[in-house]
Amino acid sequence: MALPINITDLVNGQAIEWERLEFKKGWNPEEIVHTMCAFANDINNWGGGYIIVGIAENDGRPILPPAGLAPESLDRIQGAVLTLAYQLLPNYFPLLQPYVLQGQHILVLWCPAGDNRPYTAPITQGKGALRYPYIRYGSRSIVAKDDNLRRLQELTARIPFDDRINGKATIDDLDLGLIQAFLQEVKSDLYEESKQIRFSDLCLNMKIVNGPKEALRPLNVGLLFFSRNPEKFLDRSWIEVVIHKDKTGKNFSEKYFKGPLHHQLRAVLDYFKNNVIEEIVEKVAYKAEANRHFNFPYEAIEEALSNAVYHKSYEMDKPIEVQIWPDRIEILSFPGPVPPVDAQILKQNKRIVARDYRNRRIGDLLKELHLTEGRGTGFPTIRNAMKENNSPEPVFETDEQSTYFLSVLQAKEQIITAVEKVPFNNLEELSHFLNTLSDQVNDQDKTSDSKESEILKNALARLNDQASDQAVQIIESQLNDKLLAILNVLEEPKKRVEILEHIGLRNHSDNREKYLDPLVNLGWIEMTIPEKPTHKDQKYKRTIQGEILYNLIFGIK
Image 1 (cartoon, rainbow, N blue to C red):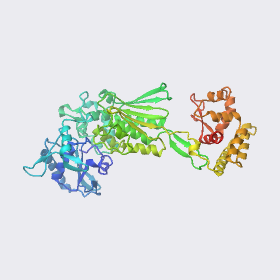
Image 2 (image 1 turned 180 degrees about the vertical axis):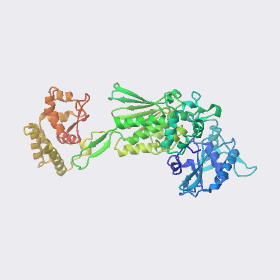
Image 3 (image 1 turned 120 degrees about the vertical axis):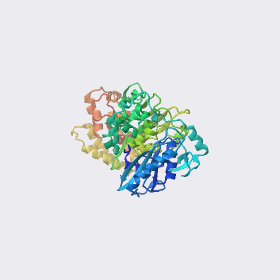
């Protein structure tokens, strides 16, 4: 029966870490039994691993195309694997599946983490051989000694929660449609077989049920991914999203994302794509091209949320909490990171590699779906995405007892001060800026009797021939006082009524057309919700060019 994994992704290390793969050019029972023992002991809670016979390796990487196995040897080797399984104590049986890859026959041994650690294997093939527990160290299998042996002994009877049987559910609570959709998405050969074999055999082969055949029960990981309502069996196993309308914390709405774990994750990410993430284009006066960025980079959100889904404890009845504020996103999960990662390590700006994983099976399925990598790349990915977007550094936080884990992604500032980003070092730069603004004025569809527009045109024409200090004086003397007052008051976005009241006018459409619209048309101020001009939360703010003009008038004295 085929394995629930795409063989091409497996061989190329795209779904499983290299440390969990071992390639053998030919059949070598002594080395293979040691690796079976190491994967069964699973000292890092990675979820075991895979032995691929028929592919040579170089420094732990496959040499392709495969060397291949003789077709007539496959039955003999599979029988030999059964013999090796009885050599392990306690006995341990991997799942076997022959494949044809690039025209060559290979054999894959799937060795999930065992339920009866520690396992031991004979050091050599032969009677009376000494027995030792083996573990994985990098891409090699070694004898567990000293601290590693103590760690392994401490793992006795410790099965990660996601790999435990759930006594509240029955095999009928698993959904065939969800299982087949998963197999089809990952392009597993098991998808076609799933249409013909018994449902219980399918679940056993996917390692999502356990127990005696007459009373199979789902594992927690099976319920989380392949039950329509996992929250029935695992309390509060959903994602809560709180959307704050402002910074006070009093005006907010809530959304609950339930269902299979990967469906939840994708639904929340889609919500971010469609409702939160915005591309912002900044037209800089002295540059031909515009600056483009996002308020929040999607890659950082995806990685932070996937990490929360991967690493939270589903044994605790606490959901993942996502708080969306106007200026930041907070993702909170419980408990905190697994040791040795602690509050101090999180503050260090470097790659963090955890020794243990809390949810080995959840991680495997997320990696199969390409929703996470699980290779210690999460923090660097988030930091790099924020850096490339010119966003503030992300914040990762826990307490001394590691009771929670918080990721904070700050929004990129949409208004950049002209003094910091667009300095005028000489008259030539100032002249170029003014020429750009002149072109914009000339492009406006203004009526000939627009007094404000004519004042601005005349001021700009005269500014091209003046030094910067003279330019300030001319703008102050020629520009309409009320337009200057509007530019001055927009230190932060404000509603129309606030702006007009500030300059002593009623909140009337005539005043908007006379004082606000000209500045919008000139590109010096803009609406915060331009696609809905009459929106109740509509505000006005200075554009980057408005910032430059403001600093030119009020900042250069």
